[in-house]
Image 1 (cartoon, helix red, strand yellow):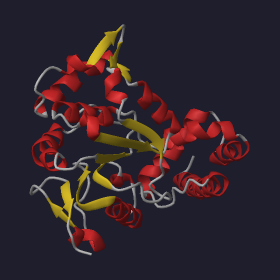
Image 2: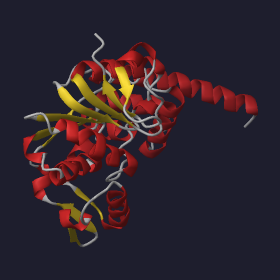
Image 3: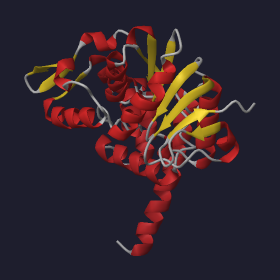
Length: 282
């Protein structure tokens, strides 16, 4: 195959992907057009390879005519990668800088956006339990993927992850042993049922869905890196409108600082860290 043919094939696939994105939006209301193009195109191509179908157009046809296929598609297009107490420094800052402020509220609302398989939502639950705040907190853990949410509700993870989770917990300032919060079962760990009591796992699409209540803390870590600039600004605006005045926003280590038209409405809590407090600027 000549280099020209490779270029032509790639250009044809790009057209097919644009049609795939359009079909997903028109048929099911999932709009991925604002995602960072290069990374999203890679995920569509990977989905195509795993599907065993001859072309991306054939993948689009199946998507249009087989509604039961949609959850698999969304699961592959989203990025459900996380771990308990991921980026321990961030959780240590939450413990030290944020929880003492949240303790002043009679009821606390937290939104974990893009919760993947629930590891960070359960990490928050442990943090809050150790601070004596869990019983007056409601955590709303949301994701675009029903498949990811189903796994999150189980609270079961591979045993091979336990050491990493435990190391993260200690680095985040954990006062005991993470094993106090789970039971080892064969090759898995099952988190204590008490951690689920104040967590609501629910589907929410950051691209098209609206404000999600009045929150005291929002966490959306390493999700915005997959969005284009316009979509990033849309989501930051959504977070702004979902936070109480003086509420906190925690982003991921790989994400750029809050900028653009919302830069004046979020004050960095600690220099160099992606943890912000909403200002009182109207």
